[in-house]
Amino acid sequence: MPMPVIILIAVILTLAAAVPATWYITSENHRKQDAIKVDSAEAKARAIIDEALREKESKVREAKLEIREETFKEKNELEKEIQSRRNEVAKSERRIQQKEEQIDGRVEQLERREQSLAAKEEELQKLQIEVSKLNEQRVQELERISGLTSEQAKEHLLKIVEDEVKLDSARMIKEIEAEAREEAEKRAKEYVVNAIQRCAADHVSEATISVVQLPGDEMKGRIIGREGRNIRTLETMTGVDLIIDDTPEAVVISAFDPIRREVARVALEKLIVDGRIHPARIEEMVAKAQREVDARIKEEGEAATLEVGVHGIHPELVRLLGKMRFRTSYGQNALKHSIEVAQLSGLLASELGLDVRLAKRAGLLHDIGKAVDHEMEGSHVQLGAELCRKYRESQTVINSVESHHGDVEPASLIACIVQAADTISAARPGARRETLEAYTTRLKQLEEITNSFKGVSNSYAIQAGREVRVMVVPEQISDADMVLLARDISKKIESDMEYPGQIKVNVIRESRVTDYAK
Image (cartoon, rainbow, N blue to C red; front, top):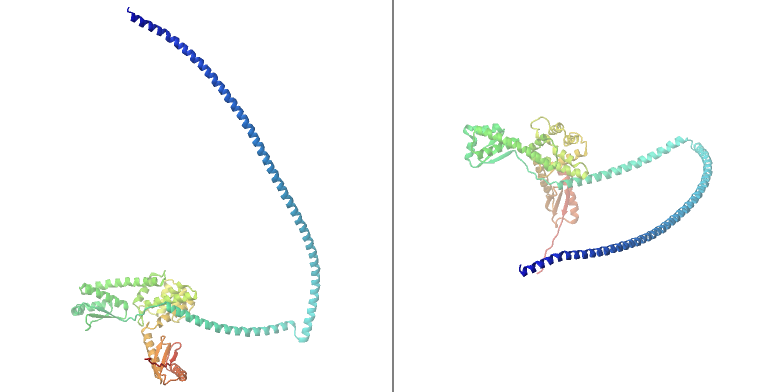
C-alpha cells in the first residue's frame, strides 16, 4: 500500500475520532450556558415581579388616599348644604310666624269692624223706620194740601213729562228726518255719479235692416232666379224681405226680427261665396246659417255672463241672454243694456255695502223677458219673472225683475238698485233714439231761448243741458243788468221748457282793451 493512501486513511480516522469528541464538548458547553441563561432569566423575572408588587402596593395606597380626600370633601359640601337648608327653613319658619301674627291681627280688626258695622246697621234700621214715618207724614200733608192722592199726583207728573218728551222727540225726529233726507239725497247722487263714471259703455243705435254687399250687379239676377224662385224660397225660409233695387252691388234685408235678419244675412253671404244659388242649395245654407246663429247666440250669452262675472245661471237662461243680442229697444241693444245695468247695479251695491254678485245677477236678468216677448203673450216683466221662477232664481232676483218698471213694490235694496241702474242706462244721451232726439231738441231750445234776449251775443248749453253760459255785449249790458238778465232767462226757461233737475244760468260779461307798444 502506498504511503499517501496510508496517510489519508490515518487523517480520516483521526477526523472520525475527533468529531464526536468535539460535538460532545460543544454540547456540554452549550448546556452550561443555557443553565446560566435560565438562572439569569429567573432572577430577572423575580425582580420584575417584585417591582410590580411594589408599584401595585404604592398605587393602592395612593388610591386609598384619593378616596379619603374626596370623601372628606363631599362630606364638607354636604354639611355646608345641610346648614344652608337649615338656615332657609329657619327663615321660612320666621316668615310664617310673622304672617300668622299679621293674620291674627287682621282677624281681630275684622271682628272689631264687624261689631261696628252691626251697630251701624241697627242705627240705620232705626233711621229708616223714622224716615218712612216722616215720609208717610209728608205724603199725607201733601195730599191734604194739594187735594190729590199720591197716585193722582204721579199720573199728573207722568203726563206732564210725557207731553214734554213727545214734543222733544217730535222735534228731534223732524230734524233727524230732514238731515237724513238731505244726507241720503247727497249720498245717492254721489253713488250714482260714481257708478256712471266707473261704467263706460258704447251705445250703438241699431236699425231693422241689414245690407249685404255683392261682388257685382249680375249677382242680383241669380239671387232673384228664374221667375223669382230663389228670392221667394229665401224669403219663405227666413221670414224676411229682400229689397233688390237700383243700389249698386248691394241687397237690403228688412225684418223686425233681428234673429231672422241675421240668419238671412249669413245664408245669403254663404250663397254668394258658394255661387250655386237654387232652392235646394238655399234650404241647405239657411239650415247651416240657423245652426251658426244658434251657436253664436250661446256664445253671446256665455260671454255676457263672463263679462259681468255672474256664474251658475241655468243654460236656458244663458241661451235667452244670447238671443237678446239680436233684440233692440228703441234702437238700444237689449243685451248691451242688460250688461250695463248689471255693471251699474254691482257698482251701486258695492257703494252701499250690499251683495255685489246678487245685484249683478239681478241686473243681468232684469230684461230676460224681452228674449221671448215676441213669441209669448204678456209683458217682458211678467215673462221674465216667470222664467226666473221656472229656472229657480232667488226671490230677490225675481222681485227685481218684477219691480224694475214699478209693476210691483221692490222688496229689497237690490231691487231698488236695479230699477235705478235700468233708468240710468236707458237715459244716457245717445242710448236710445227717442232720448237722443229729445236731448238735442232740448239743447237747441235752451240756446234759442237765451239768444232771444237783447244784449246776448252768444250762448252755449253745456253739462248735458244742465248749464247754459250766456255771453253778453258789454256795451249793452251793465253789471247791474246782468243780475236782472240772469233772472229773466231763468224765468223764461222755467215757463217754456220741460227738463229734469235744474239748469244753471251763467251770464258772462267781459271787456277787453288791447294796445300795442311800438
